[in-house]
Length: 107
Length: 123
Figure 1 (cartoon, rainbow over the protein chains, first blue to last red):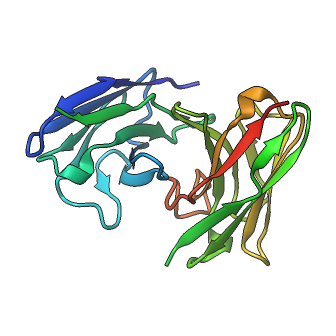
Figure 2: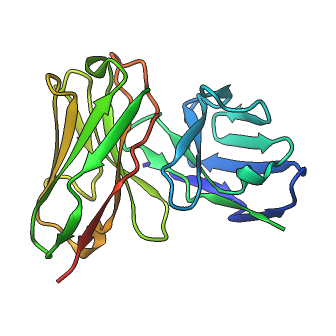
C-alpha cells in the first residue's frame, strides 16, 4: 500500500498570503495524484488531477506540481473561501489511498 | 448538471446489514467507473470500493473485503453498496463519487461527490 504523508498538518495563514502544501508518497506514483478540497459539512471537491491539471471551474490561483514521490499544492493568494482541509490521493495502484489532510486555517 | 445522490444510511447494530444506493445523473453513466469513499467522524478520507464502467470489475479495501459488495445497474444509473457484518469502525459518512481507475473510463479521479450518507453502527 502506498502511504501519502501530507505536511504540515495545519497551516495558519492570512487572506492574501501564499499557501504551500506538501504530499509525499512512500513510493513513486508517477503523476497519478489528485488534490481535493473539503469544507466543513461538505463533500470533497476535486481541485487538481494528474499532479498539475486544474479541474473544471477551479480558479487559477490553485496550482499543482511534482511527480514521483513529492508533490505540492500552491494557492497563490488565499481567498476567504479557501480556508478548508486539503487531501491528496493517488491512483497509481490498488488500494487507492488518501493523505491525512492539511487544514488551512485563518491566522 | 453532473450529480450523484446517496441514500440508505442509518443506525444499525453491530453484525447487521445495510444497503446504500447512489443515483447518478447528468452524464453517461455507462462510461464511468463509480466509487465509494468513507469518512469516520472527525477523520480523513478512506477509499472503500470501485466498480468499473461495465460492472465486470470490482475492487475493495482490505478493511471491507468479504463484507461489502459493490454493484451497479446501468439501466437505472445507480450504484449500490451492500454492507454486511457491520462493525463499530464502519461508522462514517459514505460518499458516492463518479470515477475511479478503469481503462475504459474517462474519469480516473473522483468528481463529483455526493453529499454523503451517515452510517452509524452501534448497539
